[in-house]
Image 1 (cartoon, rainbow, N blue to C red):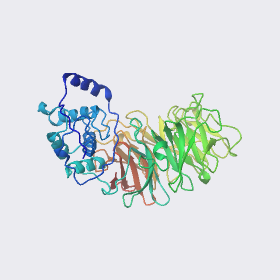
Image 2: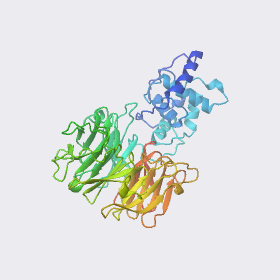
Image 3: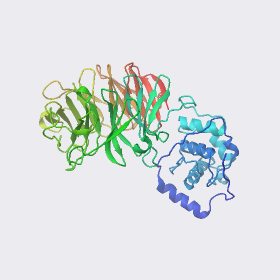
Image 4: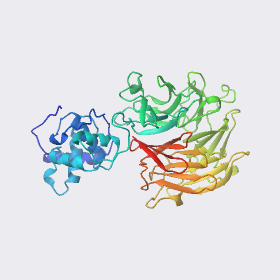
Length: 511
């Protein structure tokens, strides 16, 4: 093992002053996980690591230091002991040797390794498990995950979709600050094995490692043929990516499709009749309106939606002052509903005729209970459910009957009364909603929990937030398969929680 040892020890007075300033200024900017190459025990506890040291033990140490998360400094896992690594090690030492300042030197020696090998970090994920096992020959970390021979490469998992064959497709955001590549992967949930991946650093043969860098996911959905469409942004701007059902080809469709409009922020994708994918985009060049686009050709490229003929008069100002089309669903294959929290209303667009209407801030639709509508879904009774983000303690659901000329309020459900003990607020800006059978499921990222709402009785149950072992952490998107298995992406802990959509019982945690 290539370990460089330096004679220099500790910090000078100047360095200590710099440490204080850097720790205060840096803030946590994330990390980059490098794969461990062995898990047979590297005996890192016998090594002394300091500035410019490199090798597998440095990788293991950096992954463990990040897992303990006692510092707000950058803990980038590079395999080289950098100045920032030294700051992170010092912070760890100050935490675990609080009464023994002689150990505060920013060097990972035997005593520091003893703590790294025996203590259990706050973040118990598969990466930390592997790092402690590799460095110390044993581990006290209890991480649920696949066997060491085939770990999943989850990297800030965001959007989830279930394919027709039951495979789980995961869109990983990666880390846009440290330039870790995003990816799309296919997981066999029955075996917990990674089947295929496109876009991470190990996959340069299809160009994915370049094309996905700096990716941030907005939305994703399958077309009728099984190809996955993903909307978001990267260094090239806002775009939609199409991943072939065979996982062998990736297409990128830039915005400004057949138009001089500045089409930005493709927030929401939804599948309409015949598998046509519609995209609700955000602020355009007049900074006031939303645009609807659709994939107009066999290659999947996008054009402005116009009317039922898909090609005559532009409708490029759907819902004036519609700043943020946060969510879109398509009802009965022909009616698009768009949530617009920026103007506290809902927009409906007839996909056959091109007619559009606004509800929520007009006299004809008062009483719908809309309060910062953020997420939409259609239940098994074909009713429209609206998640109102409201304020910190006024989050609610509006259940709407849309069978008539105008939507009618059926029920308002307060989610504030469903807070678990110790919860003080609800934040649904990164959340999602999904329907299965007699239930609507809602993710609550602020409190790391899930809500299950019975669509018949309107009763609400909360799962997680300290109860059970659901491992919710930054839980954002969901997918449910035909068997009633509900999958939840935990973006902040690189895991996916699987539970029973009917009972809420935990099935497994993948990472």
